[in-house]
Length: 314
Image (tube, rainbow, N blue to C red):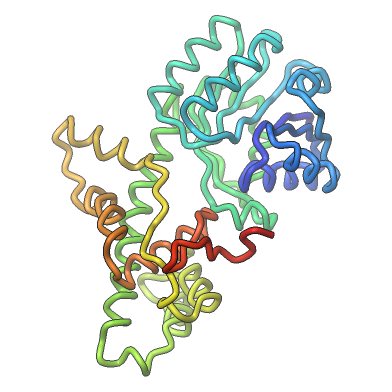
């Protein structure tokens, strides 16, 4: 199948390469000349303009957006939609607010362009490592069926593609997923803090312990595996800043729940702890920063506020 991908950051490029590996004809574009050259060097079609990308695809087209939420999505759609034909499908694979996704669905529907909001999970390391991702899809069933073959090839397994419901439900489900993720990160971070501040801190190999917890324990799972990996790669926490990158999406769920008197104390506290971590030297903060770097590629900061992410600047 032919498909276009706009946005060649950590997730967009990885999924573009995976789609090409699975036999799809991929045309990819990014505002960055460097990103387009990198895509071209890895065998992808990388035209110079969005107009060229649309021209290279035969209708009905499927075009995936992996650009930051908010204005970048709207600006991309303003540039893209006038070039499309009725029946084309635009997929927003980023972490957009579900209200924006509902609005965009209605706006594109007036031009007979089909729109899907697709929450994407699995982590950038998975996508770039050809392991695939998971997709939560909101939108009309016919649009979903059109892109489902591509999504299944991009997914980690058959169960990783789910049509949640009508427009905006995919992005809403993804944000609830992120809220759960925040609570899990906070719990793991607090576990690291308990171990690091215990009388046994000098005797315990934290990486080895988390690796052990990945085998058969009640708390086993991908985040525990990533914590083990991160502690292996960053054996000392002392040089890390406690600053944790916050892209802000979980605040939307916290605000929405608060307006409706829905108690979500774990998620709300985990969100607030990101602010606490900016001025506090706890190992929990550093553990959360390590985990967010592992699954999302978010930068790590050193104690002098230098980016110490592995490979940064290369």
